Image (tube, rainbow, N blue to C red; front, side, top):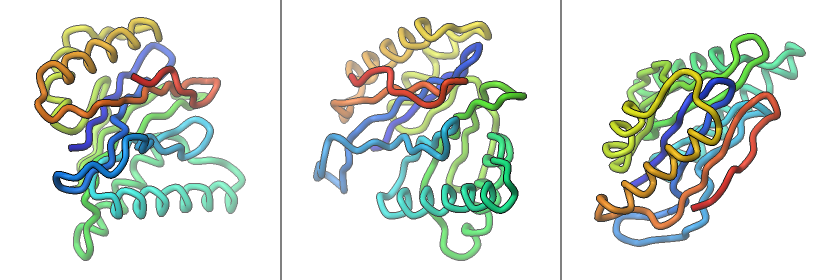
Length: 193
């Protein structure tokens, strides 16, 4: 039932996730932040089983921080994406993590980038991406509205239109969402819906 989407703009990445935590048909809480900061300019949007989601994200974040400490330089977004893919692929052969994710980041040299990964260790760089039943409605909308010079205001309008579509058309739509932006100034919350 997890839902998240991301949009790459001209000089930023915007991500949105539901804030519901559920197990089977039981709602556990409505304020779960599934957009996890990796460092000042990178975040994971992560969906899946609660244990896998937390364990895998903490494992990757700890190793990314360890690399930065050992080498005196942080990994760029592409490197974090490839490292994450490698760890998912390794785990797939023994004890797989059942989680899908978006990696959103901003780098000094590369600018904004958005990567989509699934539990089978598929990695692809995307302009718009998402996971969950809600993404069936939002991704087609985003494909129609997206352009390379997207502003934060336009992306926010796209996200709000996508959330409205999910709430209107999805029977099991989550009630609350959080929208965050990653850019040269770091990670910040734009709004909660």
